[in-house]
Amino acid sequence: GEDVEQSLFLSVREGDSSVINCTYTDSSSTYLYWYKQEPGAGLQLLTYIFSNMDMKQDQRLTVLLNKKDKHLSLRIADTQTGDSAIYFCAGSGGYNKLIFGAGTRLAVHP
Amino acid sequence: GAVVSQHPSWVICKSGTSVKIECRSLDFQATTMFWYRQFPKQSLMLMATSNEGSKATYEQGVEKDKFLINHASLTLSTLTVTSAHPEDSSFYICSAPQGGSNQPQHFGDGTRLSIL
Image 1 (cartoon, rainbow over the protein chains, first blue to last red):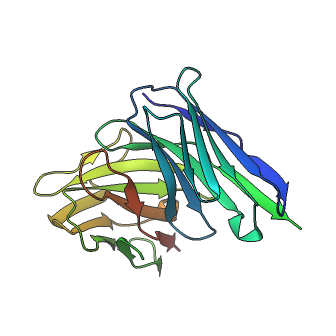
Image 2 (spheres, rainbow over the protein chains, first blue to last red; image 1 turned 180 degrees about the vertical axis):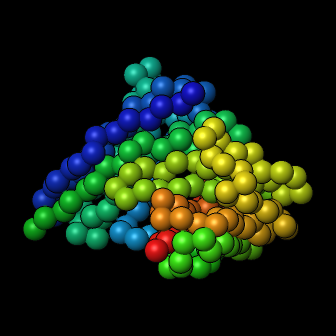
């Protein structure tokens, strides 16, 4: 089955770029997703990329997909304090099932 | 705005009580919904797939008699934690794909369940 791994913690200075990395095992995922979770809240869909794309940009967010290495990354430009949260990458495990990574806690400091 | 509504957001109850959590898709129909459980500082674990008009599909290790799922309509799925005990305390989140198969899933805001 699908296995998704990501680094657990990232600390950046306000205004800098953040890059959160994720690796996955199942290359059959149609889509790969990035979700954001703030404390005590559900998951907010940030962005997603179709598996036949290499890159997707949406305002401050850039997703890069390297299918050969099964590596997915999320870049947040001009990181703000409001970006502090846990970021989950997820792959599709078939039948719309999502398999989540452990989550990367992003801390933004002044 | 929210496309999936989950209710209640917080429940505190005594051990032995059964608790029902509702998940509604807003402005779209969902023949399939998903229920996840999240322990503190951990990732989400898929519990079951809720299928409208048929039985839910449970993941390995999830007790179907403990976690009853009913997908009563195309916009509503319910999860009932029967005879809840302190070890059932957790954050439960539902999701639904908007637009059909392989479409991005939208999540409810979650229900924090605390069993005393």
